[in-house]
Amino acid sequence: MLRMRKQMPILLTVVPVFLLAFLVRAPHVNPPNDPTHSMEAVLQPPPEVAGTLRRACGDCHSNETKWPWYSQVEPLGSILTEDVEKGRRALNFSEWRNDKRAAAVLLAACEAVESGRMPKSGYRTMHPDKTPTGTEVRALCAWTQRTGLQLLTSSSTKHKRPAGD
Image (cartoon, rainbow, N blue to C red; front, side):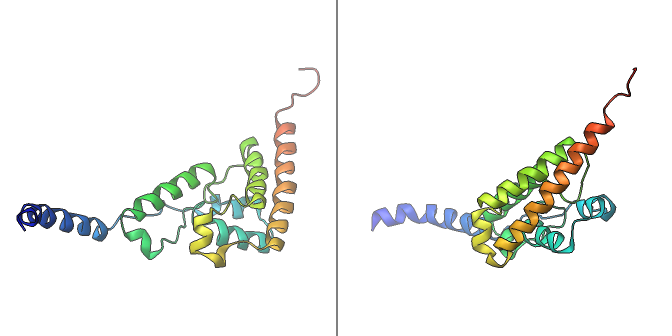
């Protein structure tokens, strides 16, 4: 009984702080989005590929993240925010640039989706409807490989010096 009395002030402090941590909402603000700079506007993928990219990849790899309700609960909110920020740094469909890196990113995206590394397993578990089907993966890979090679070819011809220089 005496031991319980000594622990009571600690419990009365720790429990409310712990509960408050779960009630604090993490701010989720998507960066500004200019649709004219998006991969969709620049590369114009076929509609089925664009739809797959939006559905399966867009929450982590664009400035149009649809934050789920559980992202408002800490510590999940911080974990999800970090995942999205990391995803946007690696590949952001909303801020697309056609360069050699873009070609490499497209080719790597196919490999990541084909191997099952992307979407991440936790995302697939929470959003099974966003997991790409085999047909979608094949269409995505065919497009990324074709477009990636076109980007590599066009960027290498841009940087060649004319004969006699």
